[in-house]
Length: 386
Ligand code: COS
Image 1 (cartoon, protein in one colour):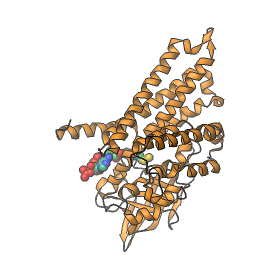
Image 2 (tube, helix red, strand yellow):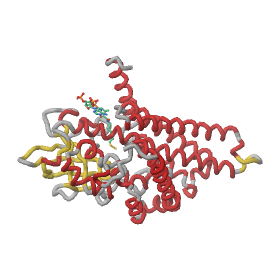
Image 3 (spheres, rainbow, N blue to C red):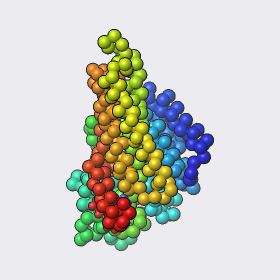
């Protein structure tokens, strides 16, 4: 649904206030305690954040991609762990259902996902299948009106809180690669499903990733999303959208860090004047601003094109590559502008530096985005569309 400008502005303002008043003051606490407090989660539910990408008939806000990106950018202006609380419900955990689910599947799960009462996770990655997602080995073998799942998924965001997983598993063991893969909704309380302990991570404390293990887990055949063998395409379509969302979160962080840099550089004096007046500091801040603005323009353009019905695989990967790499450079410069203070926890800059590193890894590494960009360009050239 295209969003009325006034409603959109009010929503963005609400999210901005939530971020500045509720999240920013407790960033350090969340980082130290590795947990987002329940009252913040409840407030996110009240704001409707869990359901921003769910259709209205299932209780969501049904934001278009452009508005979702604006919301994600606002959420990016604080520790990314806050966004992650609702991140999988907004993105990879819900979108297979939204894009490919049957009416019955949508009616069953989307209202809970939209309200935040059900947490949804996306289980694609495995110990031996990361970038080469099509080589996954988790099996789903048909047995009557069920599929029996066996295998291990790795680094699954929000798995410890999840009520249901979108699981990609191989229904045809004789067909290697992407074609033998199907997608399922698997409920957490299915016998044979175990969730591992959260991994200790470099950053984003408060957001958790775990293994999910399937041992003879019987999943009703009616939980399959799209048809048999369609699971890889389902996953890739979900990731196209997810990559735009992550680009927006990363760019939100970049904007926050630019503000932190400017404010600090105006206060901090060296050589008898604020360091903002030193040209080498100016250069770092100016490059950060130019790159962040470029990323923002890419996100908005790609989002609008997606809303207009265009295939945005090329643009989503181009945007994720640029926006997340730019965010990494911005965070690095922020440490540099803050100097020794950038390395000390009290200022929070070192935490952001650690937090943003994952942006260049998850939902496809920068190198995978380059592979996709090259592949899409070659495809377009062969089809005479370049
Ligand atoms: N949308 C819809 N369909 C897509 C698609 C997309 N974005 N990308 C690929 N497909 C389709 C292809 O068209 C192909 O279908 P056909 O055989 O009918 O032509 C099928 O999916 C297989 O695609 P492809 O041959 O390109 O698969 P590859 O094994 O070469 O893998 C990459 C492609 C590397 C792009 C994929 O494995 C990938 O994205 N890896 C990264 C995974 C990732 O992001 N992991 C993060 C986990 S979530 S935090």
